[in-house]
Amino acid sequence: MYTKNETVKIEEKSCEELIIDDYRVGIFFIKIFDTYPEATYQATPLICEETAKIMKKIAKTVVTTTKLQDRIYKLNELLEIIKKEATILWKKLTYKRPYIFRDEDLEEILLLTAYQVIGMAELTPLLMDRWVNEIYLDNPKTPIYIDHLKWGRCKTKTYLTRGEIEKIVTRIRIENDLVLKYTNPSIKGELVTKNFHARVTIDAPPLAIDGFHIDIRKLRKKPYTLPELIANKTCTLEAAAYIYYCLINRCNITVIGEPGAGKTTMINALDLLTPHIWRKIVIEDAIESIPQTEYGFHQLRLKCGKQDLEEKNGNEIYNEKSREIAKLLHRSPDWVYLGEILYPEDARAMFHALSAGLKGLQTCHGETPENVIIRWVIHHKIPAVALQPLDLILHMKKIVEKREIKRKLVQICEIKDVIDINRQENGEKLEENEKTGRNQERGEKIIELPDQKVVLVDTFQYSPKTNQAERVIKNLFMTPTLEKIKRYSYVKEERFKETLQKLEKTLKNLTLTKTFNIKQVKNSLLNTIGEGKEIS
Image 1 (cartoon, rainbow, N blue to C red):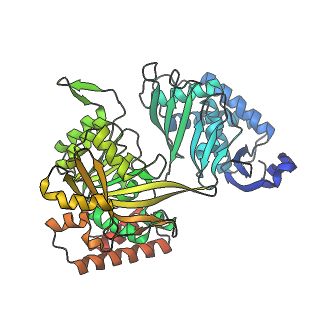
Image 2 (image 1 turned 90 degrees about the vertical axis):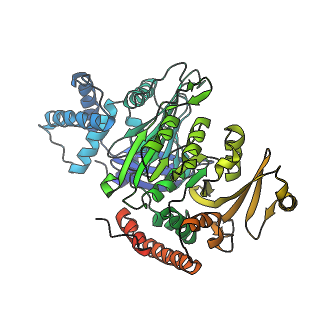
Image 3 (image 1 turned 90 degrees about the horizontal axis):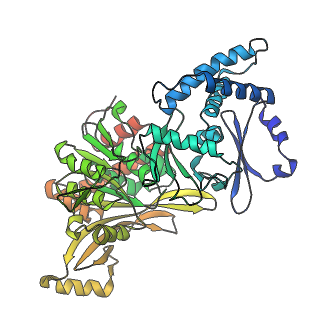
């Protein structure tokens, strides 16, 4: 194999001065070039020409000789079968002239050969690179471009052939049991291997006018924990301590934000901190939750991929996801995880479940909490009074700093009240609020809706000066969510503040010592608030 220095010689010398980053990903050498307006990402396999010829011959032989038609194999299983066949062929082709590789390098060569067989060789370095967050193909005539965690949006010189695109589409379709046709030109599924977990969205003609569109969003193999989110400045110590306190008291937490803002990252980090005795049920259409039975949790995960609508009683509209959310009431959960509340029927089912007393985490796309509430009430026809079971609304945002993409918690707000405009007894209060539009001292703001007004309280709000969400309400003990907690729990203000201080101290110690292990983080926080014994 080539060494790093030998690889550099392959490139034109005129480009070397433009290199702003380089690193290894398996047998690939990655270079980032400082080009305008986007950086350029380049992956070069560190293999000699003769090795490449052998790999190509093995791939061609495996395609024609390996029998895989007896059943449908998942990608990870398929790769292992092909690698096994490739290993046998490699030994046959090199026995007279054995190639000396380290075991890990030969493993990478055989893996790349397997990807060549299934038509995904061009995507291999992008899928393996932990710095690559999202992969885009707008249409078959354009090159792939990516979102890099360190260098932001990067272009590549990688094109996919029609055959490669069709193989990717077929893989997503059969592995996720999805139908792609004229009347259903969009599908969303997962690709899962021991090396990566990705969510793939595909749009086909006639919807995609210029040909197939592919969007591959990679999920982190090792989930973020709350101290890690503090360490990378996603949220502050004080905000994290307050959120955790509300979480442990089974308050509803809704995470909103634009696509790619870090909503799923946040709720997964929070979901990992719930007490292990809670019975947790997950409902999502794309698998983004973390399997937690290995950590001692009681967890049921349900995937609802079909969005076909059906009528009931002539007027009610249901899809698979809304039906499963409604059935949560008969499954006795202590905690529910609802991923991506997108459609009106999903929202109606969610608020039906919350009004029945279910507690948990939810994600929803939205630019601001105000916009999400307006969409729910006006577009999804959710009565404003049904919003009252919501407790914390966390607003995540994707912020580009120079070229680096940062995901931050920029706001925590809570619903204080829903006011009927027609109620005469609230006339003076409404008139006062209409004049100010916002009570700065109490962090209040009003969302005007037909016949009703929703009063929101900002507990934390983003400060450009500190680049963090800072507390804006004077006393967290007086927030709407704490008022709900105090209805059924005797909580002294001094004890509450003392608990938050202890949680901040624990989170700070975990952050400074880079203790991000799930069990250690969970045990430390539970011990801080005096909840139970350690989890083995």
